[in-house]
Amino acid sequence: MSSKLGKYEPIEEGREDTTASKYPITQPTPTLIWIAFGASIALCAAAIAFLAVEIQWHSVTPYTQSLYPQSKSQKYTCGNSTEEAKQRGCTFDILSMNWLPEQCPRDETQEFIDYSANETWVYYRDRHAEHPIKSTDELSELGDKFWWSTQREHLVHCAFMILRLHKVLERGGKIDHLTGSFGHTKHCVMMLLDASKADPENDRVNTPGNIALGSC
Image (tube, rainbow, N blue to C red):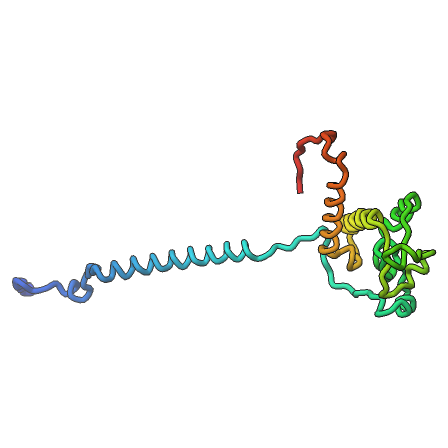
């Protein structure tokens, strides 16, 4: 029996491995490293910029909150004249000195009337108090003409108007344009503050107070 063995040829020196030649192992160059580093920095900067814009947006965008949800509803008006106001079913409100639709609140009107019964002020057609207005009906028919009264009447009007504002906010619902006007409320507050300076008794130390823990 005989067997034939294949011949083995010695590997020549300097011959490269075929696997290594097909799949060469390359080392990253300094340029690639810097590119990757720069891309990472850019992504971080973009993320920080996005967060900064979000924070700035929420800090400058007004957050509106009210005691009750605001919904679009019909606006009721009394027209452009006393006659038109009557035709639309509006009635005269002596507290606000306005003809108002029936849908508008009348909080504190009766309280104002009751308080006025114990006061001495009178409404006049002129500044010199020579032509008194005899009734509420006559007062309500003045239209765009001026009426005149005392500073005390003005202050009491302001106090009850502020009470009306608070009651409507607490309850929710419609509010007439004068009661809801910040300009009018500020005017009334300043009137009350100025009046408080006129009485020397207001400088006496006679008012106690305490510190409380509030909530909102």
